[in-house]
Image (cartoon, rainbow, N blue to C red; front, side):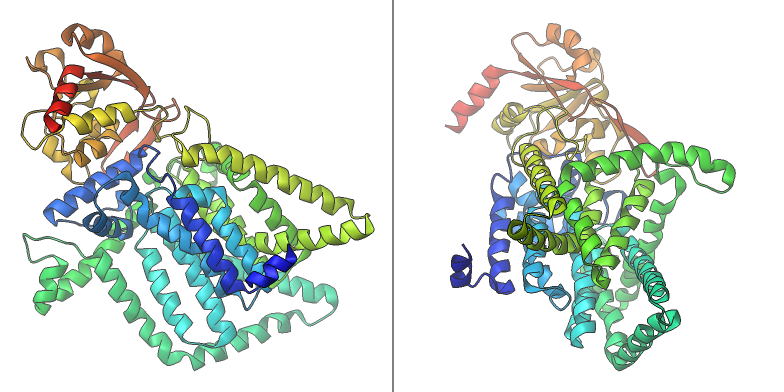
Length: 585
């Protein structure tokens, strides 16, 4: 095996990581459109389609940063609209993530660099959310590039890495609001790294103050030598931020394209893209946007802990299911290779484990992505340590602890890959896996989606009717973020009615039901008995619209609603479907 590796040149990190990136790309693109859209994918995808149709867009924090929205819209324009193309930009970013290991090459051995790429490609959580149209994976990737570029700039004194760091972090700021937590975590980790150095120096009998001042003085000298480059970086970041955050509007002079045509409008657009967007982001920090009470006094500590504990337990459970092997390897790296970069990432990961359950507004497994990228470097080092110690154990037969650790590592890895593969490459069975957030449809609604695609036409004749608590007063009100509350109960179905160009109407009660109902009627399953009498000849199908049955509270800005964990009933006029097939034929 070693001879094959040598002949292929896979001990050289760039060649090995090229192969890892290729494998990651295949793993992320195969069956990318099999899973029905999550409700979060569906709502953002729906509004992206309307942005593409109207040219209108403005930043709304409730659907997070504009990066995924703009890039996905461009993908639709080039490659068409589908579940595959909706997820493609994030999949490509996830595929490229292993290549970022090269940025840390100055701090890692070649084999550790390759191991880092493998972990970034193969971790089940990173894999799953690379196949999901959401901003967490792009944020984690851009932040990881930022850190790697800073490390490379320090170690090589090449200023080009500073430009890369600035652009990468600006892109991170365009993905999701919790991008600001990354530098906070890094500063905290750097502080703890300094404290650790002081403690080690004190125990060794060295001067504790010198252990901090020496690297600090070196850093100041380096920053002084970079002073001209550092002055340019804010301008580079500003260009990226304005390009993504500036509003788009074909009907007024407030949009980016109007400002580019008339420079006199540019200051207002820049202001809206920066200060205006920053003011909107601040709303995420308000206590009512989190699931925990604000602690203004010690008397609130009890309620805080009571509300925090379930979120913390859920977060640990996600890590245990989707990142068990990565965590075990990271602990091995932290135990046996206490280098500064490894210790730094350990503190960074710990801050995420403690902090994300507090800032979360729902129990969201995707937040664990931000901890996994922090664990990746210690895990890569730990993987090599375990491998090296295993070889030594095989020689002398005495290292029982290492053999046991390896067995635990292999067992957890097989379990995690096996269990997560079901929700990664298939429509997830109802309530199976904690990695798939509850807004994921748990049943097979593909047959109904195919029926919607079949009956939808370019005319104004209604194709789909939403009944009861799925009805809204005005369907056009849903075309922009901040849609009617009942509309959210339909998710992810609006994405599919929109991509099929189906004409959608509502009926809140039986009296509002048209005399000639559309070929597809959708309602909460509690209305099945009422509708069966009104829809004779329609076939009936019930399926879960979300993965887990418990209600999931979702607080949007200005109102609140619940994603109901119930089964929905689909009435389909099979004769109308067959007629539509004949017409197409």
